[in-house]
Image (tube, rainbow, N blue to C red):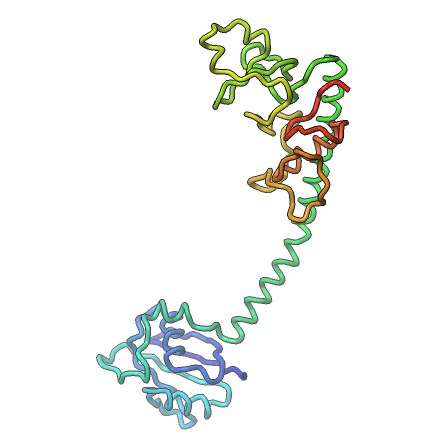
Length: 280
């Protein structure tokens, strides 16, 4: 469908716009009202080939104007008239009607062109950020794996709760049984727990194996890599290869998966987001 270039004037202001040939009068009035930021209560005229201002009162008048314009149409708007002939169909309020109208041909092309140009600029940046985040995640996983191995060798025969610190003695990681205060982010090592009264001990649960209870990925060595998207960690990507060990929970953050893979040496380990540090 061909397009028509319109120059519209109101008092000492002029707007240039492009509409599709065949645009309805109600659509044109709504577009003009939005461009000039005025109510849809104005008189509308067009300048013919003789230089006369001809009133556009209905769709037939607009059809005649478009047919004889030669691709360029001059419009005059006036807000001084008190009454206007009713259009063929009742128009909606200017703001709502303009919002629901299709964009003019050239405007739509410009919008799509700008979107594609923006994508071409931003996609390389997104790819670079993703690559940097992956490299930092790999580095964090290696550091976690190294610390896991060191902790395992330093405490043979004992469970190491990597990433968990005793809130009393500062032991990090907690070695042996971990005592976690129910419904709170608070953990004790064996020595600190034994100093509590029997009544105080009742508020804790003993964890003999690493557990994700009260666990925060930020407590891992080095914390989460910088540059990851807002809201990270999320779950595993859709379509992630099947075949994870039995008991490995769905939705586990990607960083945990990397750390778990780097440190856990038993395929059947049922550990969740914690590094498995049982003696081998």
